[in-house]
Image (cartoon, rainbow, N blue to C red; front, side, top):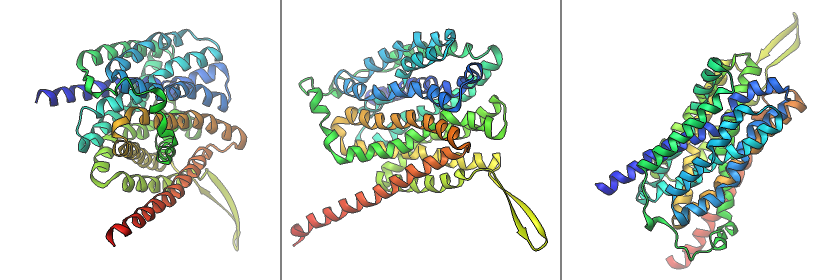
Length: 416
């Protein structure tokens, strides 16, 4: 019981730490709106501003995953969180665009916490429970929704510069709480005689690249939309920032909290079936969300008649809510693939896959802004996501079909 209690303590403290890290990682999705107005940024510049923390949070995931395998998740995550406190605080004193971009890179280190916590938590549980454990930890993605609840209230109370100051205090407190309630088990570490290059050999395996593509859709899409949706509600439907953030949280909250549900589904039905249905749900939802607000006139026998087609805020939010649930489940199912296929090297593989997902989250907000600047159609962001899901479905169908045929052919001599 003592060992089980310690495992749950590790899970709880790690989930809290990751939630705070993700909250702060997503901060520019809200405070970026007044910053955009103050600096007179265009849509592409706003997309780059929101995406800068995602870049470093993605690039550092591979080394963090490997360091976690080697040194243990407790010390790596604790030092990572402490390293971001000062840059977060300094954002309050930034005055020009490049200040925000540079500080955003340092704040982005918090996003690497996922590649530390995932293998750290998973190794405290038996294999048949790892999907659920990783799903509970991954529910820290709900920090994207927490940011949408906290930041608008702080902005209304004392201006946007107050937000980084509060977030710096939150990060410091979360790091100390994590250190007190977490634990270390040296047997979970990969032996030191395993070289860096040896741990990266899995890059040669097609499975790893496939999981990277899936994760770039479910996690990269989640991050990109979490950063973009507050601005979308403000621009498309004319809501104020507090109402827009609340509605955007209808996507971010289930997209994080229900990751544990996705882990349970993956344990019960398998990673392939769950991921397959997630992609189909997203495919349908993005098709509906892609349609822009449209007015058209047709000539009838009684004269000209005008029609309007477009999603109301309520319909839009409901569909986005479904997307959030699907992405939460998909994020867990992809990591169930990893725990099943790479149980002895979860840290390094999760770092690589997390890197792909994070880079998707970095590129998408910039592309969202760019396509709006070029086309003038705000729903073009969903058109882009629709295309990425199409790629995933086609790749998934043919790749798993090929593997099933090869497995069947390999079994024939044995049965004969």
